[in-house]
Image (tube, rainbow, N blue to C red; front, side, top):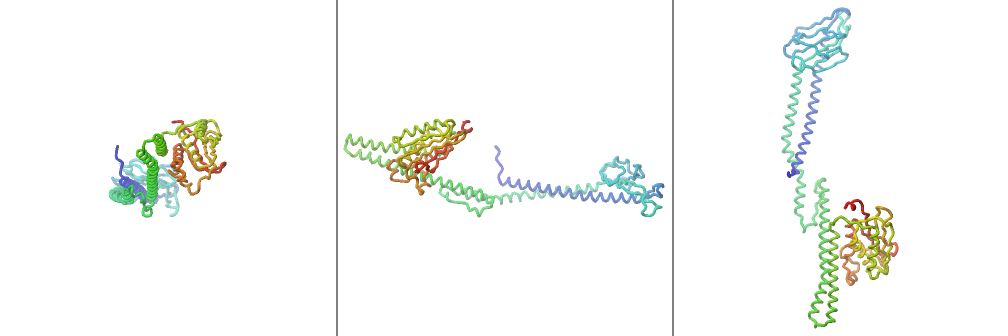
Length: 476
C-alpha cells in the first residue's frame, strides 16, 4: 500500500495548483485582451486603407466610365513579390471594376456588401486578413460632395507581423508563468510549513500529556481560529478520559472497600474457630456465619462482573415478545418471599417484540423490586405496559410507597456504590450497585432507566423504557 502524502506536501501542492489556475486565467485573459486590441488596430488600418482606395475612384457623370487614379508608390505597394497588399473594387452588381495585378484569384466570399466585414484567408501561401467596405464613387462634374454609384472595396494585407506579435506575447506569458511557478515551489513549501506550525506545536503539547497530566488543557485563545474547534474537541476528550480514569479509580477503591469488610469478617471467624476449643454446635454456627459472608462476597463479585458486562460492547440485542415480557415480570414478582406486598398490573397489546432478553429482564426487575422493598414502605406496584400499536416502546415501572428519593441524593442515584443510608445498606447486605447495574443493562439494550414521577403510591418510581424490535433486530 502506497504511503499517503504528507500534509505539508498536500498543502504545497494545493497552493501550486491554485497559483497555476490563477496564472492560467490571468495569462489567458491578458492574451485575449491583447489579441483583441491588436486585431482591432489591424482592422482599423485595413478599413482606413479601403476607404482611402475608395477616394481614388471617380466617375465623370452618372453614365460615364469609372477611373482609378493610383500613384506609383501605391502601385508598388500592390506589386511586391512577397506579402503584397491586395484589393478588389466591385460594382453594385458584383462585377469587378479593378483589382491589384498581384492577386491570383478573388476569394469566393468577396461580394458586394452593405456593411463592413472582416475575414481571414490564405493567399500566396501566407495568412491574410481582408475587409469589405461599402462606398460610393466621386462624380467629377457634380462638385466635391456629389456621389456616384455604390461600390464595394475589398482590401487585404498580410497578417504575419500581427501573428508574430501575438506569438511573442504568448511565449512571454508562458515563460513568465513558468518562471513564477518554479520560483513559487519554495514559497509554497515555506507557506505550508509556516501554516502547519501551530498544528505541530499542538502535536508536541499533546505528546506531553500522559495519565498523570490529564488535567492539562489547551489554551484556545493562543490558537488560530481553524484549530480552536479541534483543540476544544481534544479538551473535551481529555475531560472525558479524566472522568473515566477517576471513575475507575473510585470504582477500584470502592470495590476494595466493599470486599475488605466481608473478607475481614471471614478471616476473623476462621481465626476464632481455630483458637477455640472444638464444639460441634458452635463450630456449626460459625460455619453458617462464614458461609453467609462467603455468599455476600460471591454476590458482590457477581454484581461487579455484571456491571462490567453492562458497559461492554456486546453482541446484537436479542428480542423478547410482549407475552414473554409479562410472563417474566410475573415470575420475578412471585420469586420474592413477600410477594404479597407486590402488585402487578399488565396492560397493552399482546403481540409485538422488544429489544430485550429474558436474563436481562429478570435481572433489572429483580434489582428494582429489591430496591423498592429495601427502601420503600409496605407496598410495591409493578406496571408492565407493552404499548397500543406496532412500533410502540414498552414501559415497566416499579413504584413504592416509601419516602422517595431525596433531592440531595438524586444526582448520585445511579452511581456505583451510591447508598442513601450507609448503615442500613450495610446491615442488609446492599452494596449500592443494583441501580447502576440496571441502568447499564437497560442502556446496552437501547432503552433507558430513569427516576419517574410517582402517580399512585407517591414514593420512588423507576421507569424502564424498552424499545420496540425494528428491522435491524430482525436482520440479526
